[in-house]
Image (cartoon, rainbow, N blue to C red; front, side, top):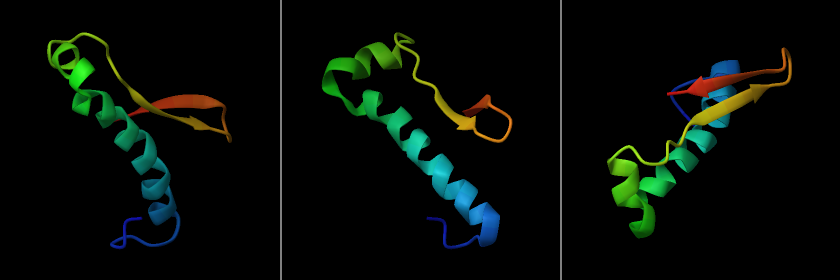
Length: 59
C-alpha cells in the first residue's frame, strides 16, 4: 500500500501495484529474461473495471 496517499487514491494504487509487480516477473526469470529484453514476449499489466467493464492497460 502507498502510505503517502489516502482514501480512494490509496486503494487504486494498491490494486494497481499487483499487476504491475506481476508484469516485472518474466524479465527476472533466467529462461525468459533474454527474450523479454529483445522484445520477445510482451507482458502487459492491465486492470479490469467492474463499473464499466473495460480493460485498462497500466504503465
